[in-house]
Figure 1 (cartoon, rainbow, N blue to C red):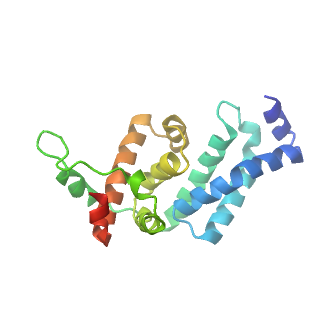
Figure 2: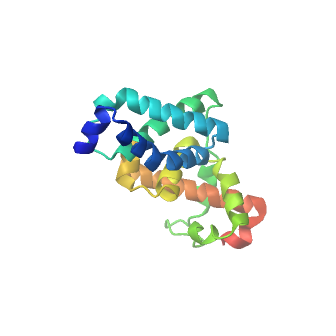
Figure 3: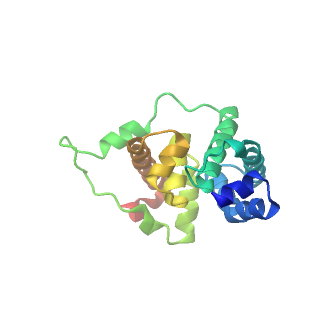
Amino acid sequence: MEGIDRLRRREPAALQAVVDENGRRLFRAARAWGLRTEEAEDVVQEVFVTFLETLDRFEGRSRVSTWLYGILHHKCLERGRVRAREQSHDPIDEAFEARFDASGGWKETPVDLDRLVGSSETGAAIEGCLGTLPQPQRDVFVLRLIEELPAADVARILGRTVTHVGVLLHRARTRLRTCLEGRGWAAHVR
């Protein structure tokens, strides 16, 4: 509780420690959520301003980083609302269904995407495909696999259940796999 009290008193050293510890990770997450470099820098600054404005409401039941990611998520959603809305019909549904047989088993066992991230060329392809994900799937993918946050923290940040986070992560992986295959990475994905 000592650290929270120092933050509430707006002690410069405590505030600087929060910025130093979280700034780069928040920027990286904002970029992964599809913001351009300048937008990501602006959003991270907005996150810290909002953090200062809402610090008195922070009860300390979660980590400061979880609180910051929650603010970041809301800021990215606000920016996303300015952009085009997601289509009501998601074509990934057909691609998703085509991967399973009648008994619900995989027609072809998927390859673990973590294995593909090894090369920079593959990383660039994944980054390009990451931008095609619907916002909820991208949010979960970024927080779970890029930022490596626990599912419970992701659920808390996004206001979803842990089960729903799992479903969104699975759909994100499936959509990424489909996108990579469409960009000529089929030999690497199989």
